[in-house]
Image (cartoon, rainbow, N blue to C red; front, side):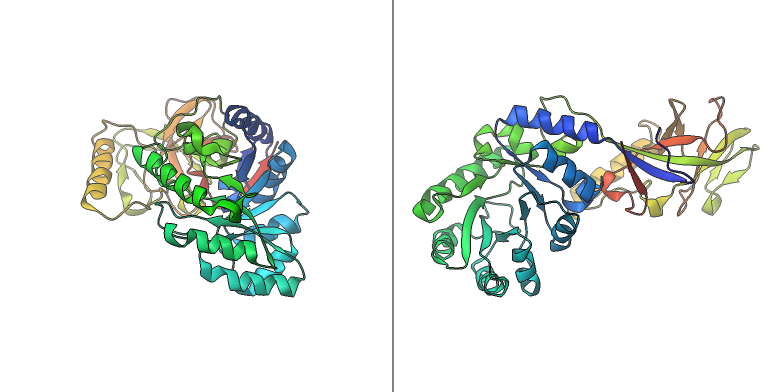
Length: 370
């Protein structure tokens, strides 16, 4: 274990695992990869991971925010870089001057890009996004041809890509989106004759082979994770392990409580350890991004009821000495307490492996690369 000196919590990232995943996906897809490194490379660390995928042979890297693109360029990474969302007009010239490929998601984006190109004294390279059902960004079917023509006629813009994004590639809706994209793509004709075509995210790379086109735009699979509604047919490695140190060990006598609110009470003498990680670090947090509906509320309630009735094991646990150790009491801001009664040989300073939603692990937690 590559423990940082003095650290009480850290994340180990295996660059070898990331490279192995990249190679496995590339072999399976059979076309070049646009490696998605948005959101701090899915929590793995933007710059080290972007550099790793660039060196592995990614045709492009992709981010969603200008700040991310700027940080990649400032790190000296020169690989082709695609910004997946429209850029603020006031930084268009800087982005064009930094050789960032920009997204056109509306005819209204074009004027600012032309102005930015004139200011930068360079051509703006763009990919035109088509909305085929995701409903967030992209030109509608009816305006796609006119937008592509305007881009191809511009003296300051080079239309170098056409793309879309799937809402649910692993379901029948994905096939419908692909059919819709095919119709639009065919209608663009000479206006996008030399454009790179890309549509497949991780799920579509597996579920919709016809969507692979000239390049697949992959994130989830590269990080060893499974996309929704499909299973990866290629071997994937987990590059992410979160650790925290044991701060103290003690025995709580029968009737003693642990944590805020005194919600957990020992029914017998219980050996516990306090570890240096809490909810402010991302431990125990779950994303709450689904729709606010009766259906989703019922599903969430059912999951909690199963755990409370002990019919499903709680996810509030860590691994220490190869054994599962459940959390007792509330998780605090930067500490948690675990029961270690049946696990021998545990000492203060030992490291426990902490389960995590990777994107929720605080960027303040140091990433160590090996």
